[in-house]
Image (tube, rainbow, N blue to C red; front, side, top):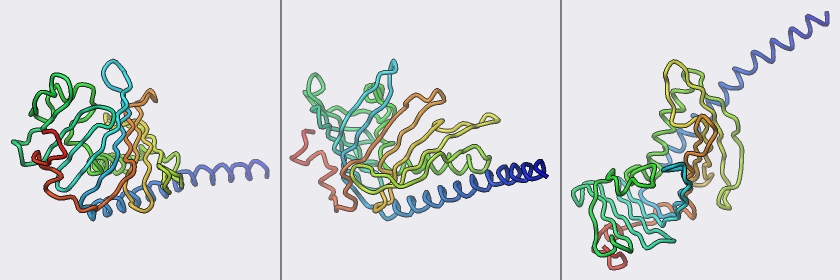
Length: 239
């Protein structure tokens, strides 16, 4: 009788695990859908963009940048702790980045392709991959594929504070098989409850070492940015 009881408990626990995982995966994809809907309504925003990433020779770089962004893809960046500026407007300036900083480059405004070696030095991503659109693109691809093949575990999905604001934190682990690849082995994402946008994302490799951590602090969506905010003629800029 005891053996039969224990066998029943084991069966219930074993069968409940896939059901719970499937439910968590469904909740995750539902939240992802809400983020995508929220991003579809977003026209522009300003934020302090914090980059904390592992780059060349495993060095950890930390930068804070004032960012202005407008759809479809216009971005202006001004570094807080360095005299650096960058401007990229898709379809303008020959699709080149306008860059200026103190020192040798500060003598003039330079133009580079977004993936030019001088711009990629010390960076994991080109300027064309900044913003919520790219984050959601990566999450949509990986979470949907991982759920399809049962290769994602939702470690945590609960309320948490981020940048002093209510958010939902999602922590997920990916276990690829059959040659499939995911962007990261573990991903932690903070979703602002009011804006329903991924304001924080941290990615780890398969050795559980930090790849990158990006935060959008003091986010102000739909502030009504104008063409002058993304013009090299703006007198507040140094281009």
